[in-house]
Image 1: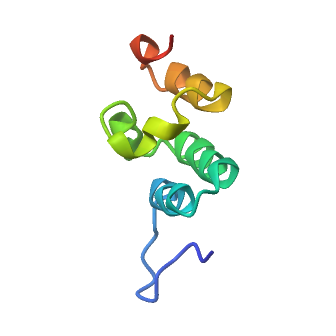
Image 2 (image 1 turned 180 degrees about the horizontal axis):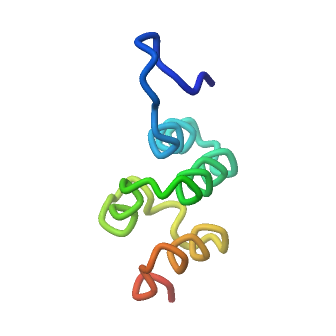
Length: 76
């Protein structure tokens, strides 16, 4: 998947994570979320609130990401 759109503008990894999740590729989605975290992507602040991520919430990688992004109340 390309990192940039034709206009040359950067596409945040969070957006690619949404795409991978929608394509039922959770490992690739989590890889992109990890990249988003490394790039300090501000879109990660919505992880807790966005229902799109509900099916991945119980996974250990997602729980770890939630802890790292200061959402400890979301982790059981």
